[in-house]
Length: 292
Figure 1 (cartoon, rainbow, N blue to C red):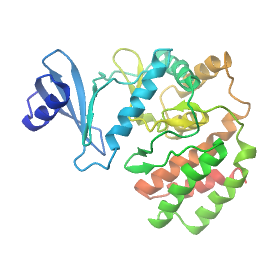
Figure 2 (cartoon, rainbow, N blue to C red):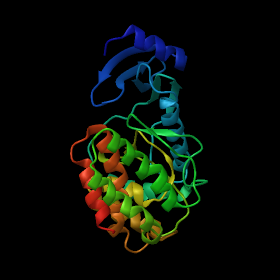
Figure 3 (tube, rainbow, N blue to C red):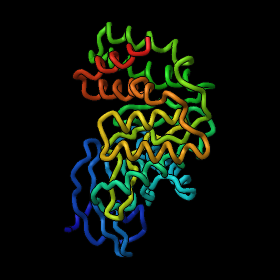
Figure 4 (spheres, rainbow, N blue to C red):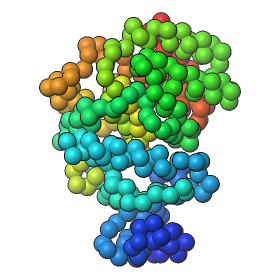
């Protein structure tokens, strides 16, 4: 590790500890990631994004801290927030390792505990971000309403505006929305990671799975499970089995949840359509059409 003076100086201002060395970290497609070694022995990850949208890193830091509250009761591991300002976030470093069956089972149990910690409402007190996109979080009374007006419709409109979704795609997706209240069982709000795809599960050398880059809010727990399945996760069946077993002790998953996976994938597919175009909106429309 060498030392990048500008990066080190900014980290030192936030942390109050000297930075001994820095090293670039590959993998991020939004922020620049740098590994820091501090004089107090701490290793940290610093994410920077010049001219970041207002509240961008503050929202991520708040989400990590909110999820960390559940960790004390057996919830999923998340990195500790060490410092944050308008253009950067510093978290404790998690040394990457290999996935394992045992870690996958532990993740399932821990995710069930995080969800069970609950939330005050469907939504969150502040708006957030998912990827580069703003994410509206103003609470609503029911999950069906929240999923329709805060998750599906904003990104469907944006996808249409960007030419990433056709009129036929939009019609198929809009036809799903009036049926949501009948399709999705009512439950109290769960504490969600909110962007729980494979890339946001970090398998640590400590044998634990860590959740990173949250877009956290109060929502229906089936959303996190659906996102885990969207792009594949190592040992996913073990994660889901362990989750269902742990949840059974307090609030079992409602029968038919596997049949609702595609329903809760409409939202992340639309987010991908907004970010990347391609065939994601058509996939969202195909998913929606299964329920109409």
